Length: 155
Image (cartoon, rainbow, N blue to C red; front, side, top):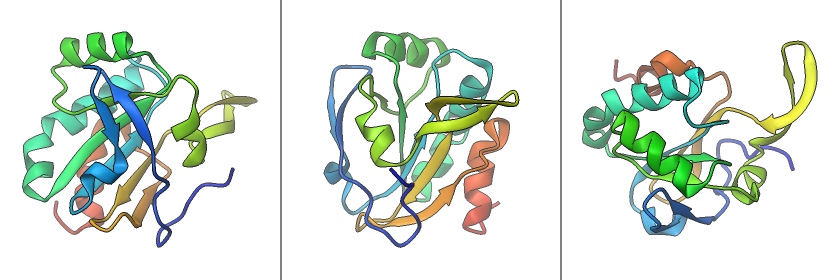
């Protein structure tokens, strides 16, 4: 599936987070969402990205954002990852890759010069009405939150 672009309605989804809570996109109508797709819990790049969002979480909240992470890892893996790094936002388990596929965040990519199939690290900013506002394809894992702030002129 091709990746949705800015201006399109965000694909609806439902999943379970690290605490066993059901998470649906429709539950966040009226809020801006940072929906980020990452390959794997406890890996260097994914940890840096999650910690950047964690370290700037209060500012993201002040600016009206909700943060949701999605990877193919299990709820149990997400729970350990969230506890280890004190992550204050939901991490959705997408083992069947339905959510990632609907956002074009799973598929063929080039890694170390070879074509492989896997998670395509991408962040979608979804507006209060459920429309994709921005898509970040080149995620700066260490500075991801500042990267989001810059998109909105809030450095």
